[in-house]
Length: 246
Ligand code: ATP
Ligand code: TYD
Image 1 (cartoon, protein in one colour):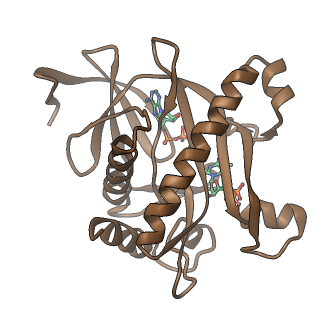
Image 2: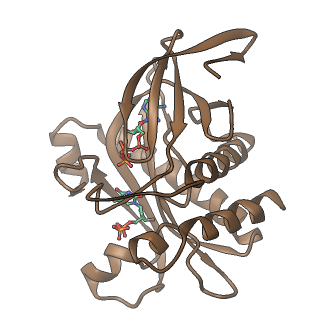
């Protein structure tokens, strides 16, 4: 399917704009709208490790769809427009900020190796970190002054990113908790609209979050792939099913 209805108009898929590690982004005949296709691909170490995993694109697209709809219902402005198929969606074309915003509720991953703290130590207050979105440089950590000095964003933009991420964290933590899942940490991307507003973009899936089963302590996210401890799609499927049942 290469055309779809949106707001009583037909939107048609056009040329491939970008192939990323997990998604393909196509232009459409409307310059304000992009067509996103989720790939069956998993990567680790910023793309250095790559594997085809059947069914992963569909699971991520469906989880993302559900989470964006939930945030929209709670007045969090975001790029999601509509789902096209189990793997494809329409989004608002944004000027993406080259900054990844990581939120941590519990210590895990790099936070544990960097500071030698106990895994799953509760972090109060929550920790928010910025990383420069650059695979070549391995997504280096950036502080506010580095970001402002390099003109990637203003201090006011950074305050907005922190404030929006905090609200999104509260909403997602509450939702996952109802599904018996602990939201350990996650990464968000934001972009600027043509009107200049900064809104949530990219995807919301276990590729970019650490999710742990509250009862068993089992990992339901991409750590399963990173640590070669099994089939990631089992955990992703469990996440989708539990969210659908709420
Ligand atoms: P990373 O996982 O580090 O973001 P990637 O570029 O390989 O890297 P993919 O998810 O495969 O990630 O690719 C999707 C690309 O589309 C990303 O570069 C993302 O920033 C971009 N993107 C997401 N939402 C939008 C949007 N609304 N407008 C423009 N670009 C977008
Ligand atoms: P982090 O612990 O910094 O890195 P790693 O996963 O390599 O140990 O990651 C914190 C959370 O943010 C985790 O859920 C993964 C997510 N994340 C991404 O999805 N992409 C990124 O580029 C970064 C830096 C983090």
